[in-house]
Length: 458
Image 1 (cartoon, rainbow, N blue to C red):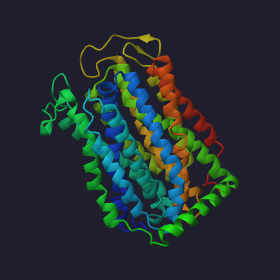
Image 2 (image 1 turned 180 degrees about the horizontal axis):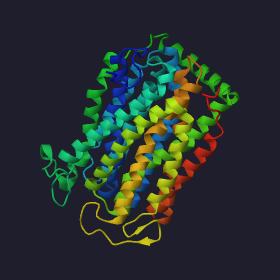
Image 3 (image 1 turned 30 degrees about the horizontal axis):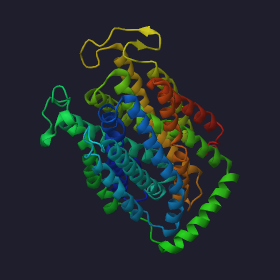
Image 4 (image 1 turned 90 degrees about the vertical axis):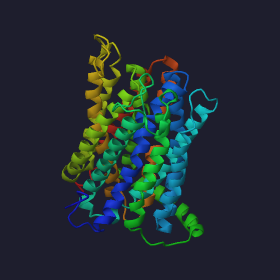
């Protein structure tokens, strides 16, 4: 049985590949529960004064984390290439990931410090998970042959989505409850005496994500081999900074890499904003609570898992550039459909009857679910194929620093899309107007990607 769905005989052993794949499973609750479907919408609807203000503040926090990651990721990646070993870096950045998630418990609505604690905890956790991911991604070329990188990357994203699905079902089925009924999605009273009136289950999504990470990241450290340590830290810092300067100079003459990093920078900005504001937008535009948003999240993780598996195979068959282009087209057209929906209207001009009281009983909600399902199916292949394309374009022996540049390109302006969404939302008072900005980022990224030479053709 091929546990990774990657290769019958990977270069590393099955346990090694399995341990690497579980990293995506381990980190996904931070993205699924904290950022998108549980804590983020809870922050906007219950902690901030208004949903629009919550969307604005969440955007600024996302921008701050992105700026920090953008500035440091290439530097740390270059240093890591000199030191060799990646696991110590992953362990180091696991600390802020866990601490940031734990902080989210202390965000009782109405508390004078709830907004500040929520935003700081979110920023710290985001920085931790993104930096740990940089160094984990750099392990890919040591695990499978290049011809199987698409499946490795796609399988990782698929397993990550599956982890998001399981964690979301646990959070919604046993922890987060409707404040009006005091019951979870499965009809139970929240476990551990979590108080629905104070968002106990929503706040507990942070500590739950931290515990989940600590349990499931362990196989990476136990079974996945690391490269040997090559240099002490102090000389590695000096040499790494010199290497980074040389890499930047080389990138200017390496046109495919340079254009790809620019394209990745733009469309990843849009994706960061989509993840940051998707649940918040649904809460404001459709009046969804944690139960509806979480159910929507379950749908997205299911379609995302399918999309990642299919996308990984298409990556090996057609190449990563074709997969990224197709995913961006889906995101553009379905994203346009989403901003056309509110409680009384679909496709901007079609008036519909309001919700009759049932779960997803109105036409706008059904349209939102369908379009969101396609968005979920496209997001996984976009990210999986992006890191595969980077591996194809990067010179051998410089993988971590180029993944640092990859993180830089995905984060250096990642504050821009959330910041722009926040500014437009604040200026117009309209969540739809703010969200529509994201579509421009996807479109520009697609235009730039079209200018990248396909490495398979070379």
